[in-house]
Length: 247
Ligand SMILES: [Fe+2]
Image (cartoon, rainbow, N blue to C red; front, side, top):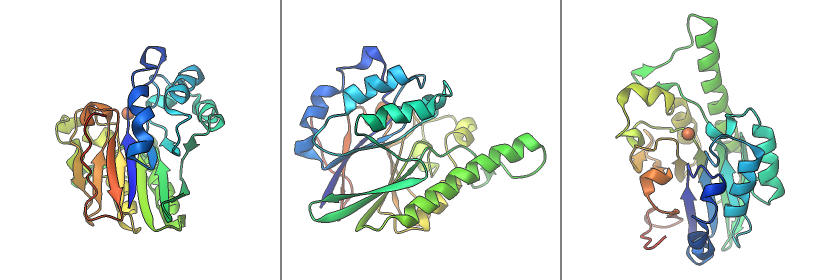
């Protein structure tokens, strides 16, 4: 079995340092890796990234992240990624990593993703140049996830995104903003690979559990949704959902 701790939308700045650390110090007893589903910072500055690295780095387990829209706010996402990488954190964007855990290979494929909407209520690649650019961005991120998922040679495969791949985990958010919270193309990429679990964040008022049309379990691990430092999910196990008390 592989145990994955996951959280998203922790929005770290100076005032957050120390808030997660006590639970994170106990994480290696409870999980084999930590995945963070974007919005690591509030405004995407390198200084905030250093705060995130101080809070979430230096654990006895591998830490793998994707960036979120907040991490792009200052147009310094490359610097943010460099600060994290220098702290030993793996940053995925259209890429994958394979971790050796308990004799198994855990593949994690990640991208920030983008909005665009879901079946029956989505943007289409038609009309103004601005709309084509918007949908083109959606499709580019989804294609990057597809490539990353299909390139990982592993025993258990996880998709890590910031934006949602299905609408089910958005329930609780206003319907009018679903198109800005995720897109169906991410779900298609997940279904076209042997994905065991899809993790995302971004939807603070959404729901934890959903499933892709192809049946892959999806979990919204945004901190305001899971209401604890991290949830733990199990792979190569009968169920993905682990009970965790006190994190
Ligand atoms: Fe977000």
